[in-house]
Length: 182
Length: 236
Image (cartoon, rainbow over all chains, first blue to last red; front, side, top):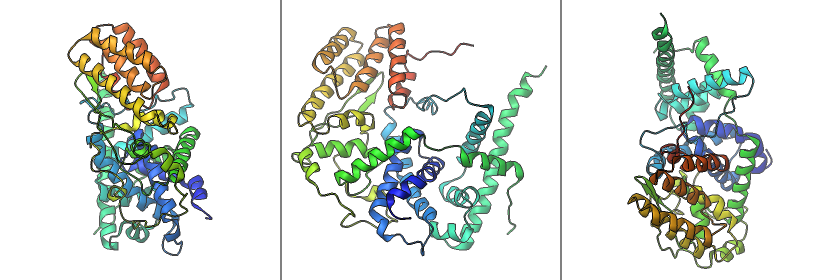
């Protein structure tokens, strides 16, 4: 990795995905991504591949940026958003003319996001690093600044919570079908 | 402690999600452009979440800060600001920092950066004014115009709130005459829709809402519009 610009080109998608998964609203991901790479720009000289992979470094930055966005979004947007919180309404219109595989993938991604929302931040972070970004648990523990046992414990809890959330979502999806049956 | 392994169906959901949310080329370009602008402007630290436009406005010496909206209308709160003198010149004269002189540690969240002024209203949401601010970044008259625009739109909002539709319409006409290429075109358009709603002009509100959504599909004001009379029910 020669410079931050190159990192931007190669890892914007990584940062983007994880900001979304860490709870940054769609509307604000662009700003949040800018913030992450601004930190990258400023801190570039401090990063060393000997200390962490670039992904874990970026994730650590994204985690903190996302936390700030989550904390501030309610008070900042409260005046704009209807009290009913139509989360999907302020997102860009969905592209509906894509192939069936894209739609299926989008649906799966939506299920994933809903299930992920059931995890609190500490569990979500370790779950994202290990089960989604496929880092080793010790590396995730380093990124998060927690000891290895804690990381394993959180991962276990996160997986169970994710399982329960998926189960609830599936049950809700099936319920209307049952109701419509004669 | 028993290890919990993910099941195949859980892994498949994760696998699908792994590839799904990625920035489009347009989003990528916007982030790149915004990042370059911040770096070039010498923004020392990422500001709070919606600070993109706020930072720009402060550098401009902008005399006003948007914003609050309540009830049926949009309310713009104008606050005198004297944080930076001759901002645009100062910003352009800043040396381009290869590295910031005193960066906080990586672990420090950007919110702790001192760049967010305490005077900034926590409700301030100037993100939707971003494009407009960028358009006028080099204009020293931008701040004064912005103040004037905000003042008019504030009055529009107040009139709408009090169901004084005639006054709201007159104020909007005045806005259009004085600021045909206003910095707050997005806000003006949203205010117009809400005025139509207050006047019971639903078809007009919906027609303007459609144009609004085409032009600013990602606007924070979209949710506000959807919550108004302009919301069109989907056909069964």
